[in-house]
Length: 284
Length: 264
Ligand SMILES: Nc1ncnc2c1ncn2[C@@H]1O[C@H](COP(=O)(O)OP(=O)(O)OP(=O)(O)O)[C@@H](O)[C@H]1O
Ligand SMILES: [Mg+2]
Image 1 (cartoon, protein in one colour):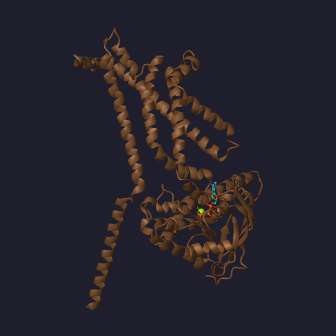
Image 2 (tube, chains in turn brown, green):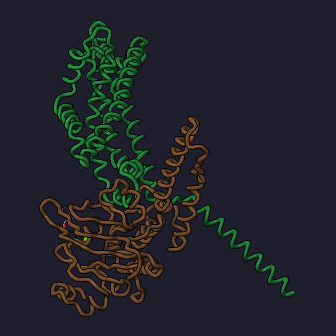
Image 3 (cartoon, protein in one colour):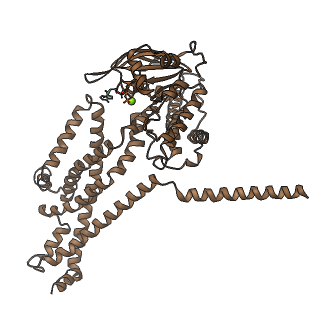
């Protein structure tokens, strides 16, 4: 994995001067970092160092107090279209967060169908407006072609969801509810639920921390496959072996800052920061 | 003697008519107030939840809701009924039963609001975060993910509220509405049967019957909701399995036939 050269790829996430306070508690105290397409970033660090907060700021689940975040060159902190940006950033949570009131299949189809329908509605509204304008003799022969329908959106979403389930070998669970599944199954479904939106980057917050040991492997395997397919990802993890194997770059966070970063060889092999050394001596 | 009295209550056409009339009134007020209460309660709960997320814009609506909830929950419902009937709606010709529906609807709205708010808040925040992280709006996550789960959580509490409401409506007899309780009082009066026990017992059975019906309904709904989440659709799964087995068998048969033919 480390052989892939991403230095010339476009910058997907450009983070500058990122700070986050919870009341008076400064959890992130100035983070400047750029993440390029194809990179696999592992974020490590002691508990409470702000790893989750950093990750959650990237898709604005937490509103940053200061600083800027650009996604594909566009400011996402002050935009009104955060939902559209979020569609392109998949997130996987420690506790899976599958929708309890929906079946596995519905979980995966939910966002694509909702958002597809919303876009269809917008197109139809635009078409109506255009027709009204044309009725008054404006905009001559401009045309808006609506190529999909609700049924088609649903069918596409379903086909894709089934294909994704097939891929993780859980097609037979399509009509099951999340509460009937094991942790490993749930997390893999949560991952493909995010994939169903075709995200440009995947954010993982300790995806295996809530799993029984025997299920960690299957989830890491899936993440590894995604990495090999070229998905850009940011993974907060305590699985050092995994970070070493999959990451192209490792961030070590402590006290709300990225104290050291570099290739896994460098961070794990010849750490410089004393706190990183101490951290590694504890976890390795 | 006592059984004779009971018999007299249920066999006298006049008395039975009074009871049925009263029963109709009780049901009318209870159902009307439930609908109004659920409606008001939902709105107030949504305002209060929205206020938590958007403190500045929602300050005034939240303030109004807070006053509403604390005043309603802090004063006796009989007093509320008197104020409505003898002060606010003391207009000649204004139907008393409408006053009663408004009073009990507004009253139960406050309780429903609190249960609903609790139900919405008891849904794991992770559910909303997951929906938002997929790019869905606040409203979409609320409507499609959070509220369906909240409803499941609050059905027992709302059910209890409806049961309490039904029984509380009996105080409308205090402002002269002829409901089930009032009918019993009329039948027991001196110039009628001049005994209260028998008519009151008959009427009690009516209340009990409705309450049991409600409990039964609530249980059924709860059970249905629980099943839908905890089990794979067993019937569907079984059908699927049988179909697959048949198909496999057909393929196998075919294969064997082909093998046989080849062998020949
Ligand atoms: N919503 C919140 N409100 C107030 N404080 C918070 C909130 N979320 C996090 N914090 C605080 O921010 C600090 C960093 O938390 P964060 O979850 O980012 O750490 P972490 O590095 O992910 O830790 P862990 O490895 O335990 O997950 C902690 O001290 C925590 O108490
Ligand atoms: Mg964390």
